[in-house]
Every structure is written in structure tokens, then in C-alpha cells.
Length: 165
Image (cartoon, rainbow, N blue to C red; front, side, top):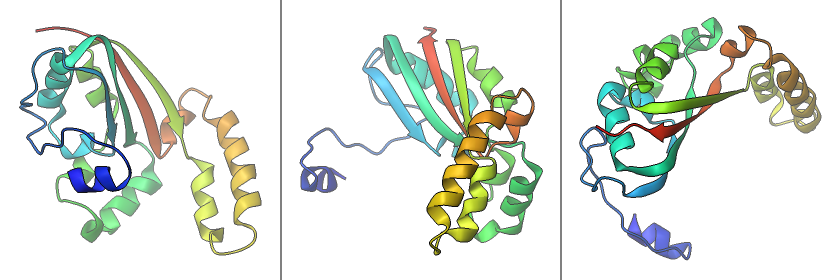
């Protein structure tokens, strides 16, 4: 909210609106940042809107859960009270990323968190930091392997070169 921004020393325009039908003018933004929201929306409607409001040369940076790891998919299905009914079937996959190609000329990805999520089991112990450091180092190697990287928990996607209408 505007009050929360002011409390932290920031100011700005705060609006609540439908992301599938943005009220902003064309070419309004240099950067759009999304964190864990795309899988709650119809990306077929959201991607064209994001491309429309981006300035030429602008980009969208999105951090999303990735939908391929069977263990994480099972966890989502076993914890329905932690999520909306829409969410489990709309976690980001290459199907959604391929849809973005209609609206963006360049899409770059980086995967995060495969083995490192095991560190959660040590979070309240003195072992947490060293275990996390080792698992992060292993992730940095493993997540470079084609195929295996798709088992990561999260993906950072940079949508660039917005295509205009």
C-alpha cells in the first residue's frame, strides 16, 4: 500500500487492477517484476498486456515455481489448503514459456533450488548454514545440466524485446 511504501521511505503510485487488462498506457515501464504471481493468472492474457506496457528495450523479470519436479508436484497436491484451487495445475512449465514467445523476442531462464531445499530440515539447527552452503554449491553444478535443471523448484525468467500488437 501507499502507507507501507511511505513507512519505508518510498513514494509512488499504488493501484490495484486486473493484470490481464492493465489500465496503464502503452510503453509505460522499463521494468516489470513478478514474484510468484504468474501461476495465479491466465498467462495468455497477461503476456500481451506486459509486452504492451513495456517500453521498447524494457523487460519483465519473473521468479516462479517450476512445474516439473515430481516430489514438489506431490507436495503441492498434498497441501491444498496452502494454495488456491487454480495453482497446482498452472505452475509454470515450458508450455507457458512458449506462449510468451508470441509477445517477447527473447526469453532467458535460470534455475534455482534443487538440492538446497533439503536444508529446510536443518533450519533450526547450527548445521543449517553449512548444509545450505554445500547444497547451494552442488545446485550451482547440477542445475547447469540440461534436463536435470528442470527439476529445480524455482526459475527466474527474463522476458525481453517486447513485441507490440
